[in-house]
Image 1 (tube, rainbow, N blue to C red):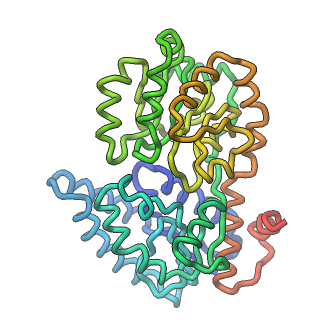
Image 2 (image 1 turned 180 degrees about the vertical axis):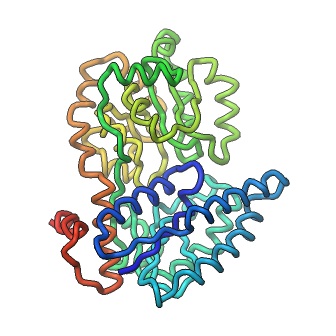
Image 3 (image 1 turned 135 degrees about the vertical axis):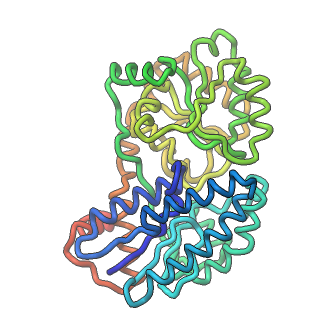
Length: 389
């Protein structure tokens, strides 16, 4: 079986879908045996695409213009490189597949661009409106990151349940409980405080960061002086109100935006936090709470459906718009050691099932189903048997 996976989302600084594509392909290749897993574009073309985007930005052109021209060239190259003669299946990990004659699997991570378009840039919403539903007609099968999203996709898009499979995503390699002395040394090297509360993720409207900052800023000054709130993640889109509050109020009350966090720094930042605070309004999976638990940490998270599905029963869950609930939980998690320890107890075990190896095995099983290929005796088959049973 020969499969090509679109890796355009993994170019440049990786956010959620970029990590998904990168880690999935890594583990698929480890489990492939005699099968072939190809990534597209090759590294050289990926660098060319990044340079193209940079050039258009320097000339003041919109990214939409860049994508239009660059996409046309890449699509031509893709269709010449991968045909039914040399490939059996195409997997699009980022919602909308490229036009191709190949049997296609697409991952639908969430439906926020359709259900809550006000959370997204206008050009993204327009792109979805033009291309998402036509893209669905080109797909044989769909993957989702959670059962919650699977049910939502089936209901909202009127897809047959047998064509939609839930495949949980995994915790990035290197995230585990670190010795305290290693954590302290790493935080010192990064110029971070020895204790803090943590938000981890891109700053965008659906992550509810403005409410979090307001709840934190309402805490007593003495508590905020001892426990700063770190915002770990890049500025996303539609952040004008969030940025205005941050610069006018929050940064003067011990909220610190530390920006994008590289993979190699993530373990120390998770381990150093008193708790991860994740008040998201909507998720397709919600990876940071699971990653925090993989590091043995305490989690305060919202009641967004997939978060309840993955870390419910372990994390302390709060309605996303319950201002008083968030303020009280922030205060409690730094003042009550017994409660804090109860949130940490069992966290690593709760996160253990979420691995990229398992994700790859479940994904490979879908590939085989779509291609009508019997399962061979390979490392992937072992993961598949474990997934099934």
